[in-house]
Image (cartoon, rainbow, N blue to C red; front, side, top):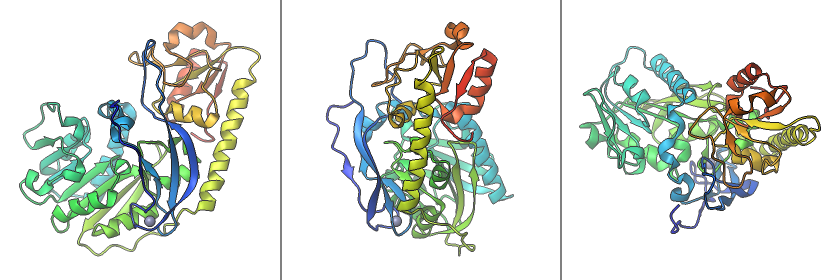
Length: 399
Ligand SMILES: [Zn+2]
């Protein structure tokens, strides 16, 4: 981490509509995520005060403090989980959504913002004459070999000159899992739309704040996601960017639930759907439900008198889950994970080491296992049954 990290920027105006934002959830000392350290790593503090604010006008939720990206991403930005099977399935679902919305339409120039490992970019190249993939992970690295109609840029979306890089105005803009990271989501989308051709199709995917509230998944509020869009605030963002709403859907299988939305430039919107806005009372009620579940989960883990307790799944987000459970996870003998790159490492501020499941196999038949990667609860529960774990605890109500 750079020692010159700038102090957090305080954000009390809604990043979508500019109205005042009210703090609905204080998160003092919230840890950073996605950091794995070796056994001899210097202990370092990754906690930073944070809060979730809510806009009374459009229902948008946002962090009220934007930390310096250099400390938030800590080099992990380049290892975003896009290469995981989960992310690929998410991209497949997005591609099906684009196919449904676009029908037989062929595009001249497509732009994918946040193209990552180019998995979706290559798919888009089949329905566009040219595709520009944009992602700062390619800023200092040479992108992989691609078909001739794909170009890759390491630009940040805020600095992107799409029309120049595409050799003309783009008529398809796609972006998944980028807008929730941006400090100025409205400015970034407006300038992209300004550069786009009339009638351009814009498709965005973001984690859904509506499903976060429905499922009470406050373990998904973390320093890297500055914005929490519900359908209401996303519709507001589209309108203010000069886009006409076309359709939307949810993907329940990815990141607890994502919102996929399509819009057209310069086209009168279809009748917008009913989109209830989140209220402070609703957020507080759902947070109370979440905390009750975390307490229940902890009581199963701490009252074990008959055998050891393990965690399973060394998720990037585990420090936040532990934060809400109010523990450094010293109750766990180890966090088991099948990824060799994570084995032998641990998290700053958490006690257990990450270990190879096979090494503990004989203990599992007597053990209680806490699923510490709740977004992969299904495959983990299957794997644990295979391994013969005696008791499985999932910190979710449904999965
Ligand atoms: Zn607002």
